[in-house]
Amino acid sequence: MDAAALQRRCDKLSSILEVARAMATQRDLDALLSMVLSAAARVAEADRCSIFLVDRERGDLWTRVAQGMGAAQEIRTPLGVGIAGHVALTGEALVIPDAYADPRFNRAVDQATGYRTRNILTVPMRSAEREGAVTGVLQALNREDGGDFNREDQELLEGLGGQAAAALENAFLHGEIERLFEGFVHASVVAIESRDPTTAGHSERVAKLTLALAQRIEREPRGPWAGRRFSREELQEIRYAALLHDFGKVGVRENVLVKANKLYPHELALLESRFELAARSRELESARRRLALLERGAARAEIEAEGARLEVELRDLAGFRELVHGCNRPTLLAEGGHERLREIASATVDPSGAQPLLTEAELTRLSIRKGSLSEEERREIESHVTHTFRFLSQIPWTRSLRRIPEIAYGHHEKLDGRGYPRKLPPQAIALETRMMTIADIYDALTANDRPYKKAVPHPRALEILEMEAREGQLDPDLLRVFVDAEVPAAALGSPAAR
Image 1 (cartoon, helix red, strand yellow):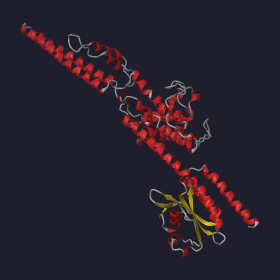
Image 2 (tube, helix red, strand yellow; image 1 turned 60 degrees about the horizontal axis):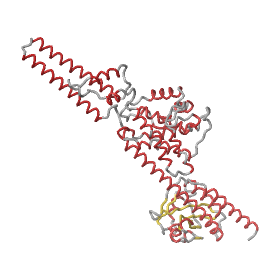
Image 3 (tube, rainbow, N blue to C red; image 1 turned 45 degrees about the vertical axis):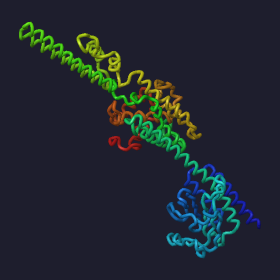
Image 4 (cartoon, helix red, strand yellow; image 1 turned 90 degrees about the vertical axis):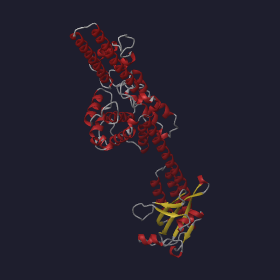
């Protein structure tokens, strides 16, 4: 071998080593296939190259990367059929000096593309991780110098094929792990929504809003977050954290989770029966008094006065009942409402006074100043954040996803330190969490699927967010991007259509 040939061989080996190092860190299948294809063309000094991969489940070969064929397209070939199929099935390399003289050559591809194939070098890509199993096939067409492919070309291409097989197996494994994560996350979201169907879609919307905000921040020319970039892995970390941020709700009692009013339905039904009993009791007592008046021959005016008295009692009872229904709704308790509830609580079902019309427990629940939850129930709802963190911390996340528990843990923290559950200072709240907090609040405000509140219009939701930013609860720079870039419209479509 002369010096020039030796140098050329050394250059090719260096090229194989260089591409092997690059392939070892590449996880995107399409990018990896293109990388292998380019290296194969250099190593074999071929005009065109193709890669065929073995689909073990379907028992065939497939490719979507082929030089000179224009846009990527998927082509499938049964194992054992054609030159590539033969090499994949037998694991033996083929050097074909005259393609058209070989009956296994498929001329239809040349006819479809207008390309003229002269000679072919096809080698198997063997996977050491699968005990030498064939992962795919590398095929080189038409040596550039017009000559035939030789033994050296075959050896070098087989060496590249071995490196490529290992990289491809890693890429396939990485893809399987990603699909596993996707399946796990999807199942977790389904579990969340099965516990609280009224918030169906919330986790997905929060994820879309947070990702859209992150992508818009990357284009931000000013502000403290200008120049911030998110890698593909970081965006995936944000997405998973957003999708799973409410998973801890599985640890909250269902009746508390979906509580629409201050009294639970069975409590309201019991109270209703008590009002009905009180009405019948007053009617019975009035009938007894009228009978007594008749027996002693009372004047007509006295009997009519008794009837008027009953009407007043029933009207007062109906007023009490209406007030209870009003106070039961999760709205702000009206001024003087607590005193009027006390008045009801002082009334009794019957004259004996043995049974109060309103129990102390009912009085306490109906006196909730805002919303539908008692302090105890509110603390239980808030505990979902801690449940989420504990659950997510049990998962052996990959290095690129290890911050998911912490990102999700802080989505109810506020920059003024008044959030929950840890009351973190602003410097302890990550950018990813700050973005998710804005997305979470916006969706909670605008969602039209909550039984305990009406949906807030998009403009009003932005006003509420801006008010919280002025009060120091939310990041004002992130909110400015959220509003100016119209992130909700970009992520979810027209707010009016929601």
